[in-house]
Image (tube, rainbow, N blue to C red; front, top):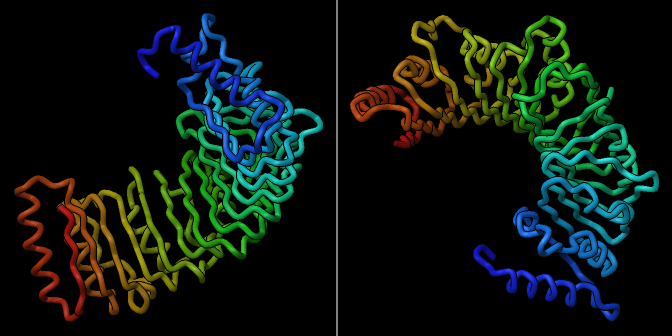
Length: 375
């Protein structure tokens, strides 16, 4: 609609009004509004966005997705008492949500928020979504709140993905009781505390966490990882030695591990200790971090998973100091089937030299494996 005249805009507004507001209306499955509607909705045109949402609700809408900036006086309270809603996604830039006392979304299965603020009334909403399966808070913030309390037995997918740059000195505790959770994603600095019930059904977790500058915060962060010990696939991103491997339980089910270690010394040693103590049955390992020159790989203890279970290794952002690491893996991964190496961080000269070194290592290895080089 860019470049439309005022007449075009008025025609569009009248068209939507006529479409949504008649009383002899058919049912509606899905209703979406994008960010652009706010830029068009100046004083000259005055789109009745709240009325459009109400009209959609009256039609028994099942899915609503709103991408709107600053929703004050736009969101009708009836949105949070609609029994027909199955999916609700709100991208509400800068909006501070306060949910009504009679909030109830009894048939809601998917609830996503993005770029919004929440106080204590968020618990009113969460506790009245009785069949919720998929919930996400992305780049959101919680203010004047002592606890994020998520207790939903039906929940299968949970994303708490906050802004690491903005979250400083969190004063709330994260409590999660979701025994049927299959997917869990968490991005934040360390909270005041974590209480996670046993997640026996957990298949995949993505954890990005930082801010462990004290012993207490390291212990608290460890509680988070302890709560997901049944996971089968773990994607872990840390920028410091957050978790003492000696405090972690054994992840008996873990068969896939992706590790991004950013900017802390000794990450190679930490990784080997993690594999040795925590992941005895690992089959697939993906690494994305810069190896520092001088690491004595041959002196490191060989994890049992590397000897007896590891079938595939992928190394992203390969640098010239990783040759010794590859040699270590080839010497000790007894059943390795596939080695994937990405050289996108190398110059053409480095790339050619490194490729020849890798081929020599593979040729001298007694294993029959597939080498994949991504340039």
